[in-house]
Length: 312
Image 1 (tube, rainbow, N blue to C red):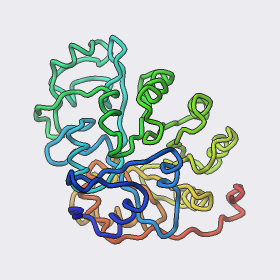
Image 2: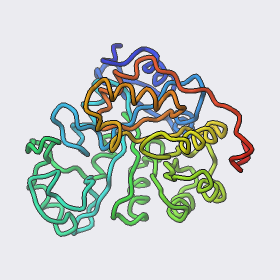
Image 3: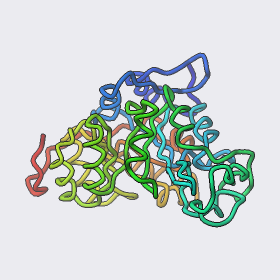
Image 4: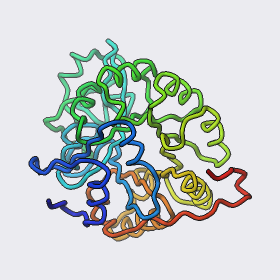
């Protein structure tokens, strides 16, 4: 099987963790159960990075948060995706990052002021502002599409958490969905609702992680989302996470993705991975996959007593 733009190093890692489908020409990831999902996200010092498409991709003239964008990425490489559930006037959960329609569709105004039927009259726009043929998808459509193909990290926008939890349950999607949480309160709701849930925990200071551990969430059910650029603080946090067997994620979308040249972006991405980050999110996941050819993840080091966090 060929993986356009990816080295065998990265491709074989994905193959070792999940099933890929050769006869489709796509690089699909399939997890038999939540245990397989936990294993996929577990930190191992010899494992190459996981690549995450931010809202899918902005490459190839495709609109963000669209099934077409997800499919494009999977034509080139195995990947996982961060997406944005948002609520319509008639309580249909769709994918849309912004609270307004203007940037990503040929409509105007607030998403919440439109019904699902009304939104279906619109078309999505790409990064260049061009109107495409693609329509706004519902979260239910995307959950069904993603089964046996990839993993979805669901960001929090304006959808009540019980609605998200019910949709995950309705589609039996627990083995390929991560719930992104930014507060212990949200994590507690999801964990009490479904103790097998996998979490993306977003926090920005080492001590903030203690509140999530206090909830009793098993470490193997956590991906640590620790920022948008590397620093001494993220180095400290990712070192702690590696000792816990937890991968750390940096999102390059608002930072390194915006560097002007390919060479600048490649240098930045490789520095992120060399720092010990083992999940890298980008608006340009196909480009990123090509650039990270052969890059290894930094080995774990003992956690310093100065961190105040006890190693596993």
